[in-house]
Image (cartoon, rainbow, N blue to C red; front, side, top):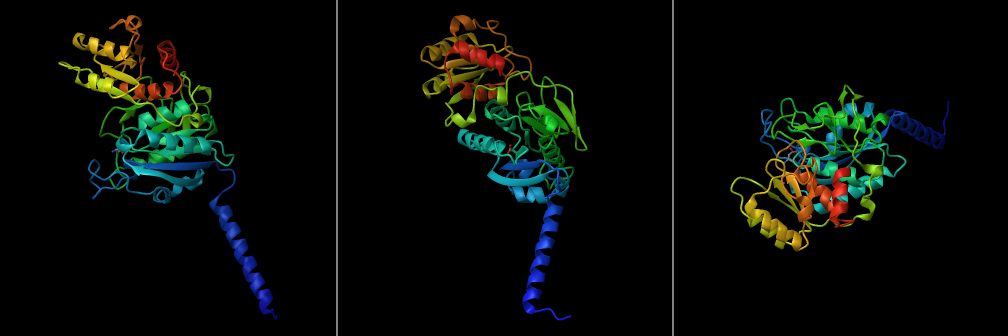
Length: 359
Ligand code: DAS
């Protein structure tokens, strides 16, 4: 049968269109949640020289597209797309990086075509970013921060399963409204509570109050929910925060001097977190230095270097008398995050103490 060249061209074009529509349909199976992965660097994007290098490697080397391409299983659980926000080791992230990331998360969370967000992140400061996001991003959509303790090139690397879990949770309706979450080593932890407690094991992350649940083979198992204020119930909103006030940390230890406290007090810091011994104890000889810092307008917040428990107000020190704040169960690095956020709204110590009880 004779077909004119024009018809043949038309038929070929139509066939191409049909093929690409079919491929599109294959690529984005209907009914899957839309999950955006924001990549910032860290070990989960790391690479080592050999498979036995589980601890010696370069962080922040692998781009987000490669992370996604390296995990084809993701396409069965969500329609995933990636954005490379930074490519850094998390110990080097700055306050400005934190603001940029949180504002991007906030913007994406408002998009109707985004059901959940995953942030791949270095593990060193993951707990601080997760807490900052839970304090300031107004969404009930799942936001999941994830890292890995070993690079993808290592034997028994943990990044792939951590990322698979994170995308599963981020695409899960039952993960909504639980604040920012962290999926590491099969656990689902609260971004507020979780900390890195071991510097070289895949079981590094834990919360003293326990995980919220677990994710196993793509299914979430929940056992508790957060009680502290977060996300939609937070009085802080990243969309109206454009700078974070400087807050520094001084640790307590046997033989401590006032060098760090005096330097911080003179640095223009708006608050000083004291990571004290025991229940936030302060060596007698440096109490006057903290009192002077307070008199000069610096907010003094007592935390503890002891990982678990919580600082009891007016126990080790007369906080009412000195007009100091206690950090409740927050470790110094988390107390600093809350202090920076709180100080964007108030420097009233009674208000600040309320905020430390509630968040
Ligand atoms: N340097 C660490 C970081 O980027 C590597 C990691 O554990 O992710 O936090």
